[in-house]
Amino acid sequence: MNQDLNAAKALPTLLLVDDSPAIHRLLAVKLKNEGIDFVAAYSGEEAISVANDIKPALVLLDVNMPEMDGFQVLHALKADPETHDIPIIMLSGDDEPEAKVRCFELGAMDYVTKPFQVAELRARISNAIRISKLVELLEKQASIDALTGLGNRAFFDRRLEEEVNKASRTSDSLTLVMCDLDHFKKLNDGFGHPAGDAVLETYAQILKDQLRTYDIPCRYGGEEFAIILPNTDSPASSMICDRIRVALEAAEWPKYPGMKATSSFGVTNISHDGSHDSAAWITAADQALYSAKSNGRNCIHVFENADNIVPAFKLAG
Amino acid sequence: MQPQGQTTPIFSSLKGDPDMDDLVTIFVHEMSETVTTMQSSYEQRDWEQLRNVAHQLKGASGGYGFEEMGQAASTLEKLLKSGDDDLDAIALELSALTDLCLRASA
Image 1: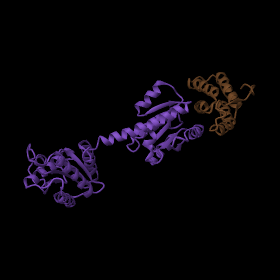
Image 2: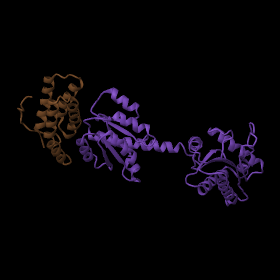
Image 3: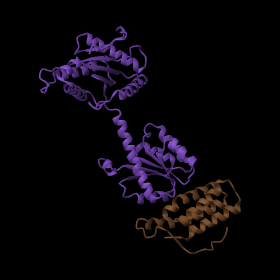
Image 4: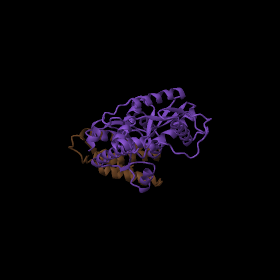
C-alpha cells in the first residue's frame, strides 16, 4: 500500500529535528531501508527555515530542545499556511499525558516517546505519511466536480473570496464570468441526458483549452459555470469569452445528429455595489448573464454600474 | 565525587547487529567527552546544562542498547527537574550515571 502510494514520486523527505547528534545517526541507519530521504535540523530555528525551503513529507520533532522547544516549533509550523499541512510526529523523553495532549491540540499527528522501538517508529512514520496523502487526496476530491473535473461550487466560493480579497489589497484587476449553456433543458429533453453530459464535458474541456493556467474555471451548478480571471481587465476577458463562445458553437456532435449547443456570458470587473464582498461580484456577473440571455443568448454582456439591479429573477435557461 | 570503582565493561544489548556496531562504537567513543561535560557542569553548578546532557542521554542510550544508562540518566534528570539542589543527592546520581557511561564498551 505504502509502496504503491510512494512509487510514482521521488522518495519522500523526512525532516528530523533533534538537538542530539546521537539520535540523528541512529535514525539515519535504522530507517535507511525505508525509502526515505533524510534531512537534519539541530535546532528549532533551523527546523522552521528548512521546513519552509524543502516542504518535507513528514517532520520528526523533538520536544525538549534548548532555546526554541518543540512546542514552539510545532506552533510556528502549524500557523504558517506554507507548512500547515505537513504531518508532524513529536519525539519526546517525557511520557506525561499533559505534554502529549498539548502536542495533539497544537496539531501534531502523533507522539512517540524516547527511547523508541525502531519498528514502532517505522510503522508510525509510514502511517503518518499515508494518512497525510489520503487527507490531501480527500481535500482535492472534495473540491472537484466529478463529471467535468473542474473545481466545484465549494472550491469556487473559496477561491473567489481569496481572489477578491487579493485584488482589493493589491488593486490588481479581476474579472468574474458566469456562463450558462443555452436552452440546456430542451437539449436534455430532445437528445437525452447522455447528450447533456457530453455537452457539459465538452464545455469543460473548451474552458481548459482556452483559458490560461492561472485562470480558475469551475462548475457553479447544473449547466452554469463560473470563471475567475485574475489580473484581467474587461477587453481581455471579453476576448477570452468570445473564443469560448465560438468554440462551443463550432463543436460537432456526430453521436447526436442535429444537436447544437451555445452559451451565454455575464462578465464583471467590479462588484455591483463597489464592495469587496464576493457575493456582490456574483450578483453583478449574474445580472450581466441575465442581460446576455435577454439579448438573445449565445453572446457576452459586460456588467456596468448603470445596469439596473434586477430584483429576484430566474434565468430563462 | 565518588571514585569510579567499577571497571566491568557493559556491552550494548544490540551488539552483533551489523547495522549498529559502528554506531555503538561512535556512541561509546563519545562517552568520555559526555562525562567530562557532566562533571564540569556539576562543578560549576550549571544544573541546566547538566539536565540537558542527562536528557539527551536518556533519549539516546536506549536506542543504542544501553538501557541501564538510560534509567540512570532519567533518575538524574528527574532529580534536577524537581529543583532539588542537594549537592550530595546530585553527586550520587551523577556518579551512578558516569560510572555506567565509562563502563560502556563497543
